[in-house]
Length: 337
Image (tube, rainbow, N blue to C red; front, top):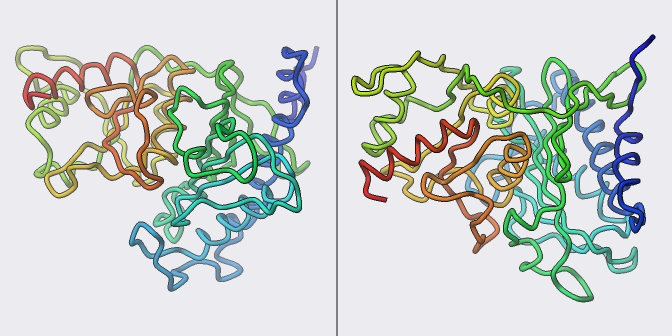
């Protein structure tokens, strides 16, 4: 008896059948994102051959140099989703303002927010990078989508996911019915179900943080890190292994499958945090909660935070529920928060 081969398209359609009132628009939107991911994956794997590596000579809204591959990924996501009639508006980490949808192609009822190429500084050294996305229903009643449509809380997400471009290309997503992972088979050009119903292991293996910035951390974050390393005399534990690549998607993906915690805390030089609430923290928080984990800014659930601006930054602790709760305890005890 051979195992069934389930493509991402078939999986999306089968999930849709649970909802008799579904029109297919949402399913097609997810498949549009999967198609964009295939195009970005193709360009990513041949980046060195086509001289797409290196800086594009432009500065993005975050004040960072944009990589050529960043621009390609951003344009691909926009072009694949602008003319389908499924979206009301989009927002990208690479664009200063919301991205309107051409009215002549029809205005849909969904909102797409995305980080087109997370970890792009790793492109030149062949470390895994990724795309992160979140999908909402529009709040505005009619006409073009608005900024407010893009500034929704994580509790309002209808889908979120990420694509990791590494030794293989994987798409992981959730529509609130568990978390499922698909691996791109380049031979047939399809995403095939490889990781059904992903759950975070109860036993954690790794912690992922840039310890080069430890001198800028609060007392609570330092003590939490020592606890992870088994150096807390009052509560000794078996130390976790440290793994940090500088690519949020790659580190999150490893910890999702193997167990652990990723964190980028507030720093003395960056008290507001570094990661973006709308494009990074909220979508991954939705995924981790669906897999039995938890995401916090050190004090509260990421999914309960109301975004105030498109490019708002925030501290992030995400992964195993017990570990993230422990981080909150240390921060509350030693930092008085």
